[in-house]
Image (cartoon, rainbow over all chains, first blue to last red; front, side, top):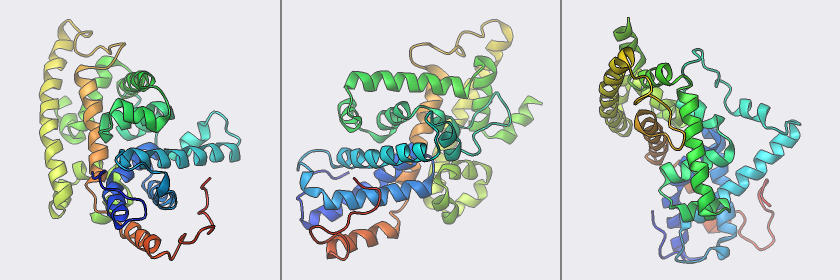
Amino acid sequence: MTTDGVSAGGGGMKADLVSAIPGLRAFAVSLCGNSDRADDLVQETLVKAWVGMNSFTAGTNLTAWLFTILRNIYYSDYRKRRRETADPDGVIAGRMVTPAAQPSHMDFLDFHAALQKLPLDQREALILIGASGLSYDEAAAVCGCAPGTMKSRVNRARNRLAELLAPDAAQGVNSGFADAAGRGRTRAEAD
Amino acid sequence: MGNNTRNNPLRSVVAAQGHKERSADDDLLGKFSARRESGRRQNVALMERSGSAKSSDCGEGVLALPRTAPTGLIGEHIGRELRGLYDEVVAQPVPDRFLELLNKLEDGTIYGEEGSPKPEGMD
């Protein structure tokens, strides 16, 4: 992703934003688990970035800067929704995001559903470090925490995901991988 | 197919697995699906091995969940799924709505003037 040569107000800004969009969308989808809402987040982020481009420091990581904006929009939206539904623990909000999160088989949870079950701080840490390609320092700057905090969030996220995906170690791991390996074929082998 | 991916990128992975024949007309997804396929074969091999281990004596070996950070099968599975989810969206073409938005921003059609109204939901 291009991060060099960004000059506020220059024509380069638009091209740089365009090249950052795929990563922004991926971050947004992983964060909120809903592609329509993700694209709304990206749209708001682009507008805010354009309006506030003077606050971008040329030569720094444009993607990280955009992630920070998107995250702020998502968090303020998230808090607003929780207030509106009088749902301080985010239980209902969590269900709204993943209506089909309840697995029909208790020994298996779909990866996407499991990811959405993580606490928000752990989910974003895992996405930023495990998929987006940002360094611990960059991800920590995006989330406004220390790099060490980011590391412990990633570890907790991975442990929680492992528990969700394989609640019973033996049974769960096999079932989880059975899905990754194609349900039909593995069922046939098991019979 | 493109529609399916656009409307719900999260599910298209599953769709690609369930309907491989449909991904043949979508080059990006086809490649993605092929890449996952090789990882999947590896999983099956590993699974078969650990499966036989489980039936004999050591359920706590490969399959036990480490307390610090998940390694081994489940750790690899998490890493692969996470990157797959992310990379799949990254590989999608930029939707027109964003290009149109940036064109409007550049033209000053929207939010072009000082003091113009901020979009909803922004601080």
